[in-house]
Each structure stands twice: as structure tokens, then as C-alpha cells.
Image (cartoon, rainbow, N blue to C red; front, top):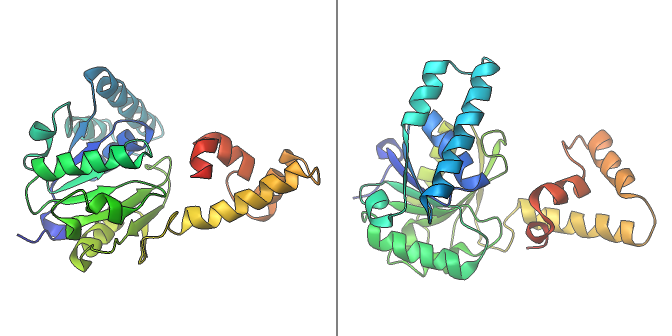
Length: 249
């Protein structure tokens, strides 16, 4: 069976960290049934508490109604079992740490547990989608779906096509991103860093070397970015926010 956007109903999110639980919250707010998968119940419970806190904030700011928040939370389940969580899904989104061996293991496990029609997507910001697809028997249904942090607020989504991803898979994820209220862009070639982080890498390097040479302060660089470029954060603020290890990947 070929999965179309209209048939997409159930989603598994692998990893319940800041990106994972943020993606889960967003999908559930849009009406999808979501199951978060992680290595233990303690992590999953903390993630669900963070989602509840976020939903309560939306209610407090009158962006959603209390009954909508309750319905969203009810649509989110948790599990430590791939077999249980992925047995009847239409889509899985992997949001584990940026380690290729770990991601390939996740994709191999999902491939065994999920129905043959299910799309397997990665939220990676830099790593090879083609490499992840090779860990499965369905590389045509493997793609990147890169959200930005925090997923519930950031508008852009990169949909990344691997060497084997079918156009149907790309179209389904593109339409899903639009339904979530995002602005999707298609990355047609699986290159390291895709579009946003490939460009940011060059910008970060220039900003950091300018500071290292003593030509300007960190505060000066960040001020120039925020007050003339219109960015919400300066480059050093952003590096602190996402972590220097992520900015260098």
C-alpha cells in the first residue's frame, strides 16, 4: 500500500527529548495519534509533563482552549517497546542524539516493527538520510524531516530526499508539514547540513574567527545580527542555545 498524506493517522516519535516531545506535541495538537518511544518510563513521564506545561501556557495565553489542551494530551501515548508502539503506525520520526550508529540501529528496528507502508523519517540536522535508509528494507520510504527548536514555534521544516527516497514519500511529508502550519522546503540532494545548517556553518565560522582575532566582541557580533539582520538570536546566543557540539556538526 502506498501511503498518501490523507491516510496518515498514527505517528511514533523515537526519542522524547526537547525535539522529540516538541514534535509529538505539535502532531497531537493537529489531531494525530502519537506514541513517544524512549528507553525508560522516567524519561517519557518527564517529556509528557513538559508537554502538559507547554499546553497549559497556550491555554493561559488564550491561544487554545482548556478542552483542546486536554484532548491533545489524551492523543499522546508512551512506550518503551518498538513492537508495541510501531505495529500500526503510518509514520515514525526519529529524534535521538546525532550519532549515526544509533540512528541506523533505530531505523533498522523501526523497519522490522512498522507496517510496510509506513514512512520512516529522521529529524537529524546534518547526518546522511541515505545512510539511514540503507539500514532498512524500505529506503524509498526513508526521508529527512528536520524541525527546528522549539518545533512548536519555529516555522521552517526541511524535507530531505535521500538517493533512494520516492517522490511520493517527499510529497507526503511536504503536505504534512503544511498541515502542521509550517513552511516546508525540499532538500533535493542529501548533502551534509542540508540547507540551513550548511549555510549557518559558514556564518558561525566567520563570526567565531572574527571574535578569536579580537576584532569585535561577542556582544557586538550578536547585536549586529539581531538589530540589522532581524534574527531573533545572535550567533553566539544561538550556539549557546543549541550547544556548540551541534553547531560544529
